[in-house]
Image (cartoon, one colour):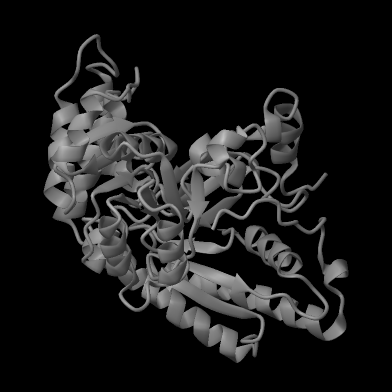
Length: 429
């Protein structure tokens, strides 16, 4: 047991007795965080910072998997939630916040004419697929990216245990930036595809007008185009990636930063399709829970009132520029690169002759955590990050790169690691 993470490891041992993986979220579990060198339980957060249960402070570049656009404990969001808490969290009939937030989304998001709420991104993507199937009276779905835990999607991944074969047979993958892969699938399943759903962007930018081509092909085949904006929504632009790239889908799903960390998601889109929500069953006891809706309204008002996206973009640009310079300085271009966009960028690591990318990543995580930076491979920028935070991140990268270079030169990575290296268990993108 480590000294720095003593309480975290004690909590993990206790949690594993009653909670599978010790966490409610796969990406926050021991499968993604190497034992003996990682914190597993947080105690609090404020602005750009998170504290673990051992009272170690971190500049957080994960932000609960992109959920915290404004940062921890944003004063405007906290005030809105506190005021609503005194009035009630859930009622026996609907609350005005349901249509107030829907109106705000319709004002901001190009495709949004009507809106319905869930609690997780998976609720929203599942609802969008059911809508598309009802609208088209077809069954098959084409997917590109990660779309949540439900059977219709997760059956296409290696985490398909428990998914009926009949369900798996209705969902098919196509490749991002490979329009031919989409054409092929649409032709193979001509007249049977209800929806084409994709993350409009993740690691790599769309090339050769890819998103517009996807839209045109989808409509040519009579299917519904769904943008899964669970991450990109309210991060790339106030209207999401669809505004950023100028391609408007039929339906879009939102979550994560919709309420700066409060549990709410949304399906939004054309009224003609959305009105079928009255006929399909998409209903939640807590779909109209008011604390999350109050947080959402406060978040969206702040996005429109203050330069949130612009500030995040500038912070992210500084990270990418400075990190690329460091990679060159340490002559690690053959191992490291940076991908993505400023508001959500990725450190890409390649296998070397001596070590896998996962072994190298484990060493980086070990040193990041030890030096007070919480990072699991991406830079999920928030409005709360400062220029000083970026400089500290770069100073920590220097420590990491020095150790990586030493490992590559001396072959001593195993000696430097204080843990067992991570292994690839589940690739979501």
